[in-house]
Amino acid sequence: MPTRIIIATRESQLALWQAEHIRACLRARYPDLQVELLGMTTQGDQILDSPLSRIGGKGLFVKELEQAMAEGRADLAVHSMKDVPMVLPEGFALTAITEREDPRDALISNHYKNLAELPAGAVVGTSSLRRQAQIRARFPQLKIETLRGNVNTRLRKLDEGQYDAIVLAAAGLKRLELGHRISGLLAPEDSLPAVGQGALGIEIRSDRADLAHLLAPLNDANTAACVRAERELGRVLQGGCQAPIGGYAELIDGRLRLRGFVSDLDGVRFYRAEASGDLSDPEALGQRVAESLLEQGADKVMAELLGH
Image 1: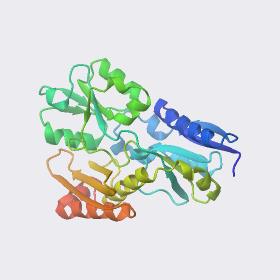
Image 2 (image 1 turned 30 degrees about the vertical axis):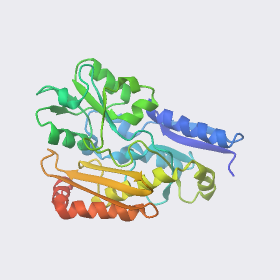
Image 3 (image 1 turned 180 degrees about the vertical axis):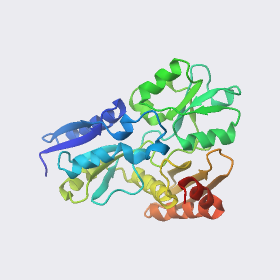
Image 4 (image 1 turned 120 degrees about the vertical axis):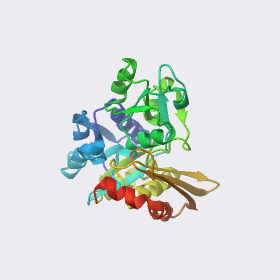
C-alpha cells in the first residue's frame, strides 16, 4: 500500500475542486496516507480562442496529466468523465468512477427562465456542438455563439451582456456552489447530456495494481455501469468533440436504460435511439444503441463530420 500519492490536476477552479474532493475521500478512508496535488496547465486550458472541435478535442485536457503519470511525477489524475477520450492511450486505465452529480445541462440567464422564453435573435453561448445542435433543432430562431473559458469566465461574459443566456453542465455549477445561478435545468428529453457528464473518473497507469486496489472503494458501481454504457456508445460512433453526440444512461428498476442521439451541426438530420439492458454488460447496451443510430443514417453524418 502506498504511503504517499500525487494527484495530477488541471489548475482551473473546477478541476482543483475535483482533485480536492478525491483527496478528501482518500484521507477519510486512509488517514495515514499523504496525498498531494500537482497542478498543471493543459493545452485545452491555454487555447481559448477556438472551439475544441477545431483544435483537437477533449484529449487536450488530459494529455499533460497522462504525461506526468508516465514519467512518474504523478500517480493518478482526476477527470470530468465528459472530458475523457473514448479510448485511452495504451498503458492507462480508468480505475474508479465516483457517484454521479446532476448530469443535466443548465440554462443561466439574468432575464429568462428557459429557452422557450428567449426572443428570436437572442444570443445563447455554448462551446458544445451537442448543445448547439439540440438547441438549433428545437429553437432555430435563436442565435448560438461559441463560449470558451472556465466557469467564472463564462458567467462574467454573460453578466457583461455578451450573451442573453448560456448553457453549462449543472454538475460543475453545483460543485462550485454556484447552483443559485441556474435559471432552469434542461430535462434529458430536451437536452440529452454528454457521455459521462456529471461523473468523475480516476485514471492511473495500468501497471499500478497497488493504486487500483487503493482506489477500488471509491468506485460507484451504478454510476460506473451507466458511464461505461455511454462511453461504448461514444466509442462505436467515434464521438469526440467533432460531432453532436449525446449519450445518457440511467438505472431504472435494476436495468440500464440508455438514450443516444447523433445529428448534423444544424440539428436538421437528427437521429435518436434508446434501449434497455443488463447492468452486468453495459458495453453491449452501448453497442446496441450506437448501431441503431448508425443504421438510421447517423453513419453518413459522422462520415461527413469526421471527414471520412
